[in-house]
Length: 152
Image 1 (cartoon, helix red, strand yellow):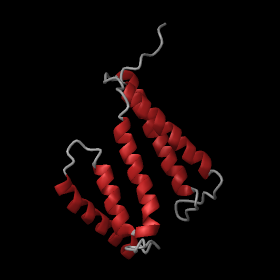
Image 2 (cartoon, rainbow, N blue to C red; image 1 turned 90 degrees about the vertical axis):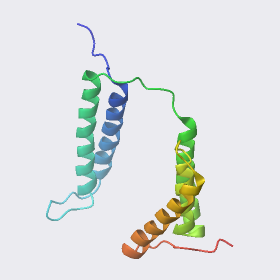
Image 3 (cartoon, rainbow, N blue to C red; image 1 turned 30 degrees about the vertical axis):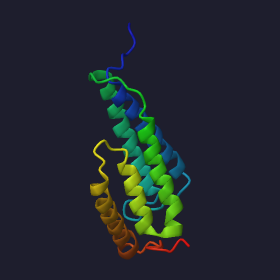
Image 4 (cartoon, rainbow, N blue to C red; image 1 turned 45 degrees about the vertical axis):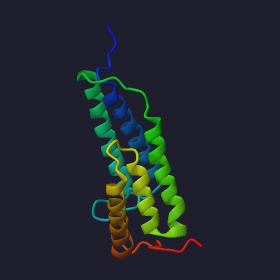
């Protein structure tokens, strides 16, 4: 009997990643009290979410075995680097400059990964996104993050 052929490597690989990360969440959450649906403990949400991620991953990987799909292409290293840089810059800039500047820089650097990137459109959208995030997370949810801070 011939072994299973992976018809859709993208789906199969994505499914394995979902299983890996979902399983990791479940394993890590075992160290926390689970609770019940009515009185959730700190381990309830990551366990349930991780288990759902594992189920979705198994279904996605199984689909990769039966449906035809494109092969996995070359990794887009430039795009990966831009998204990673945007995330790192946000983490470094928030305590120094606040949510508005850090969020704007994050959105601009992340947007540069798109083939549709145009600076004249990206700047106002990034600024609007940063202001919205500050309103939601700082004003609305009360997170203790600076909105604007003089870096000097």
